[in-house]
Image (cartoon, rainbow, N blue to C red; front, side, top):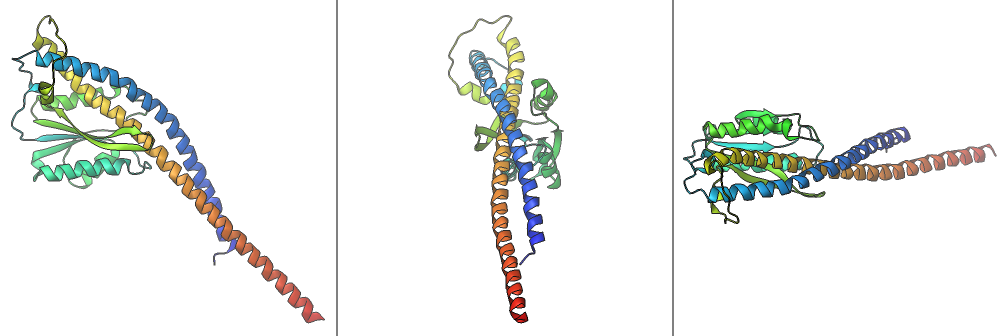
Length: 285
């Protein structure tokens, strides 16, 4: 049996750990509230621009914009979004597993694809496995703005325009609730799904449909990436809050168990001392 000093040391160690995890839980809860509000506030803009772009694209029978045209796939790009650090439960593991399995299933050679890594965890994961990482973005703040990731969105779209990639997919954690996040795969480019929708409004164009699509389509594609980043950031804080709550609860259970062991050991030591005193007194009689 461990000594009283060892048990007491473990109790103190777990108390300090629980204080840290509790503090991290509260910080993540505060960040989650702001991130959730940002993600929800972006939804109306996302829905409206999708509606407008779809209506414009459907109303233009001779549209030639490269983002609307499907071409033979020689190389595929994958935007994979994770966090820069761990302590978030299965948040990073789930999205990396989903992306890695999809890549291995679809491709036989590394010449057929490349990854655009968002987050240090993603970058390190794919580089260790020999997966080509063509671009990376790390250090995204918790209160992210579009200007902070504008270079990432522009670079990603430019790779498609320059035909570095013939199609683009994005993998991220979709925020469902504070205790649930879903790994989501979404096709970014080409925007072939727009042509399968139903026209809901008519517009008069000035100067022309093509000129408007030249502006709207890149903005729409950028909004898909930005929306996924906002969604992933909310999911990250939710996952970390849950993970830290579980860690705090586990630490408290360990503390309770150790406290019980400590009290039993102390009681046994006291009983032993009393027995020795009584035995010594009896020997003197």
